Length: 161
Image (cartoon, rainbow, N blue to C red; front, top):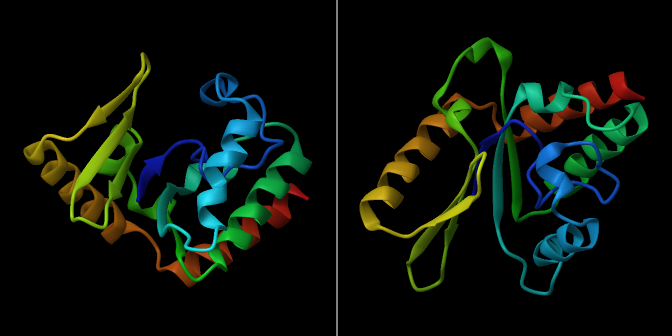
């Protein structure tokens, strides 16, 4: 589960996405390798929540933006991928405090990854995980349903074409 970033999360961005300071350190090949977990024989489930501003924030030129949003739509069509958008109408929400990733494992364990200005931080302490799970539910409850989110992404992609 990916919670409300201001740029497209590395796990779903295209190989051509350029220009984002947070992407400069991560080579495109590494991003593509991480994405392979979504297309392998037993793919991981991914539920991502993005702020609507992410769809409008220019990263590269219009072609790159259209390609990125089309890629999100393609991923969203996979049965194990859900993409939700928190619309502008929500205003300020808890997801704007910073992006995070929650990963659940088959054994019931959880781990989180927080992305900060200085470094990434892995979190595994039970109380911290519980807090992030609550935050996740609050963000997701503000987001549009999957189908509405995909339709919004398609509309915005057309503006970049």
